[in-house]
Image: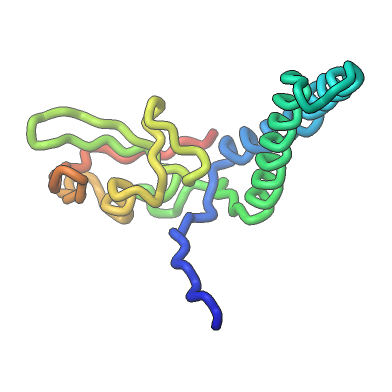
Length: 167
């Protein structure tokens, strides 16, 4: 009997040119710099003799597995991504890549950029297009009210500005 297929969480394939560059640089660094360094360290540790109790050897092999796993992931992911490298025709609406400023009911202002799931960074205000906030903001215009479902209830925001920058 076949096992039922699992529902995979849908992850958007979109990325900004900057995000693609960052992932490509990470892949290049892992492949050309980090992996050779760790491989050399493992070879040196292996030359010391008994590998079963050699902490440097065991740790190095673990590092290599992690690096190889990340290299495989990045290689596959980069081949699947769609780079969104142009500003939309209608810049009055929120689309992928937009910087959006919203105000909550208490007057607090928040600024977000809608990016791909591979490049979200809360510290920089980058939110994934797959996030509840981004989904609520898509296709909205300045002055629109947005209701966002959050774990602690719903929140209401007003879109105060939409900016697209060519980077």
